[in-house]
Length: 255
Ligand SMILES: Nc1ncnc2c1ncn2[C@@H]1O[C@H](COP(=O)(O)OP(=O)(O)OP(=O)(O)O)[C@@H](O)[C@H]1O
Ligand SMILES: [Mg+2]
Image (cartoon, rainbow, N blue to C red; front, top):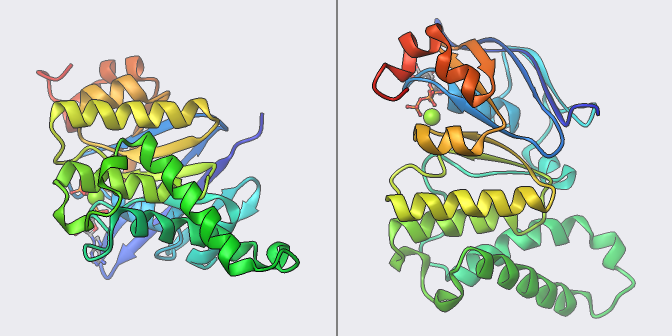
C-alpha cells in the first residue's frame, strides 16, 4: 500500500544551527509511528515542518502523494491532518465544549459550499459541531465537565481536551507532540488507550514522546533523532537493541 506520509530530506537551519538534517521516513495508512530522541534533538522542529508551521530549508513532505511543502496551515485541516502542541494550546477562558466545538468548525467551514443549500446553514452547522464535539468529549471522558472553563481543569484533563479538539474533525492523520508529558501513570495509560481506540477507527498517528514504556507499547515503528539526524528506525524490539540508540538516548537502565 502506498505511504500516507512521506518525508524526504527535511533540513532546517536556524542561523548557523542545523536543527534538523536530511531526515527521511514515512508513515503507512493505519500506522502509529513514534519519533524519539534527546532534548533539543529537533523533534518539534521536524513536526513544525511536516505540519507547515515552518518551512524547511530544504526537503519535501508528501501526504497521499501531494506535496505539502510551502502549503498553508489551513490546508492541512482540509486534507484531514491534525496536530497538538508540546505546550498546551487551549483557550482557558472558554468551556470544554466551546474549545472542542472550535475544532469541529474547522471542518464545517471547509464544507461551506456543500452546506449552502441546506438552510438554515449556520444553525445546522452549530448543531453538527455540538454533536461532533460531544462524541469526542465522551471518548476522552470529559462529558461531566462540558461547561467548565478549560483553565479550571487539571493539567491531565487539559491534555485530554487538546487531544479531543485535535480529533473532533475526524482527521485521518494526527501528529501529537508529547501527548503524555506531565501526565501521571493513570492519565498516561488513558491517553494511550484513546490513541489505540482512534487507531482502530483507521486513524494514523505520528507522535513524539519521552515516556519509553508507552512508546514501546504503542508504536508500530520508531524513528530516532539525535542532533537533528535520523540515527535509527525500526520496530520497538529493534530500537531497544540498537547500540547507537542506547548510547545516544535510551541508556542502559531503560532497556
Ligand atoms: N525558532 C528557533 N530559532 C532558533 N533555534 C531554534 C528554534 N526552534 C528550535 N531551535 C533549536 O533547534 C534545536 C532543536 O529544537 P527542538 O525544539 O526541535 O527539539 P526537540 O527535539 O523537540 O526537544 P525537546 O525534547 O526538548 O522538546 C534546538 O537546538 C533548539 O534550540
Ligand atoms: Mg520538542
